[in-house]
Image (cartoon, rainbow, N blue to C red; front, top):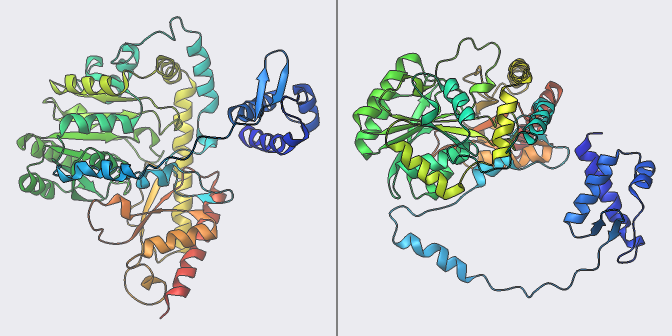
Length: 492
């Protein structure tokens, strides 16, 4: 049994037995629990720590674990209804009211119920994460002199240098800031570059987390359509002229959700159009390290071809490691760098030094390139397994593009009338989402990826967060059952 599930199972069993002991009564020793439940001492220690965090158990060094005293009655429940007025009052004076809607982000962060196959995840399954390498890196980092000292607010120089080499071009370590994950980097960049009420150009469709950041800052996302070759330059130029925007946010490599790669002939055009508009391009290079092993040479980051400081580059280690390994970089050239630095210092001070030291240990170890090669091969296998299963079991779902990087497929639900297709009109995504959960598979609806009305109904299906290709095949089978259920209830 996996260690985490063993801990949860033991904690549940001990929790159910607490009534056997009087308050302050001593629980069996760790050795007795190890023998009785046939688990490791580490599992016992973690289970007791969990019960202690819940206030059910008190542990005393050298004495053992004891049932906690009953909790005193809590304070009276207050009336917080006044906050509805206070939180909405600023909307009367702001050009674009600030709204914090995390629903599009939570879809990929929330763990599905037990037994549900996770096609909605945004991170690698634990079996794909470099858990041993990360643990070893963290252990080595903990032994570094001064590991708990305050780091430079910009980040450790060696880590900034590593990110600068990865970006390439003329980017130097002095032009890199270490941030706490890509989401944090995007938040800092948008706050630095656009005042509240301003328009910001975004790809359509695009990452819901970025749309949430923009709206929470009081910005107005303006969609610019993408195709399999990335954003369309003529429409980008039109959007700059029509809105007066000074920021464009894009994912040139394996865009989320479409998987598109910005075509070579469009790269220079995008930079030229932004430069002529006096605008910045925020390049979210979030998934470069999740390339598939059949991709061929990758295009360089836009920032590496930008001598004029048009591009503010965001990249991260998180997607290729673990959702908890939140180390990323912001790179920019010119006066904007000082504004980015100031906002980050005000918001977070700095990224904890032990995590930065662990990142250095990880990327400098022989395990790092081995991990990237293994993930690259496995993601291709999973991508092909999902695409084949969709074509075989759900041919009515359009799969216009098979990306050679990233962790998801973007499928379009059928239009038209009659049978199953009729159910995929207005509200079809929501109905299918519910039916899929009943069938035992969690999927991501397409609507949150659009900042305006979507042209069609879509699903994003992740193949990275599941345990195996067998689970992918079973998940598609369950999705077919959900589509059949929707079709049977839609009627003629």
